[in-house]
Image 1 (spheres, one colour):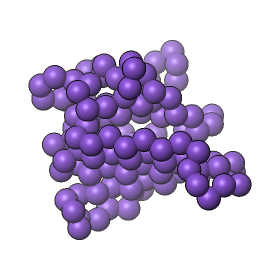
Image 2: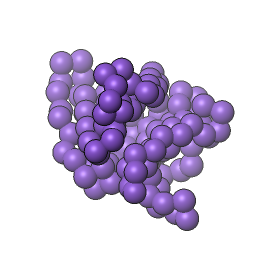
Image 3: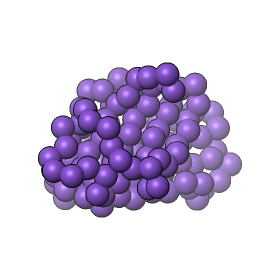
Image 4: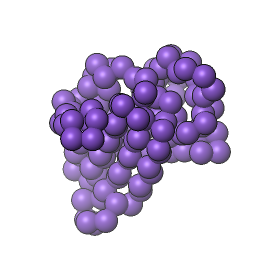
Length: 122
């Protein structure tokens, strides 16, 4: 099961997710800026996550990451800013509580601009 704080995601992303339950509980967050659109999909039952980044001038994503069986995600506020970390598979051993640092995965910022980076060799 995917460990995360849905309220913190809504707060940092500034959007309410579309929630469906066709294949478990799926959340889809879509953040739109003038030059880019970020889409984050999470199935909290199995931990599958996808992150897509589209440029306004291109139909195909300029960045795509899919993690199957992610342990979870956390929202971080530190000297680097306010961002989301999504753990890659194997980035945490044992049961993840969405508070502890992850060993590798993705970091996602939406302010001041949309920015996605990998960390820890993910």
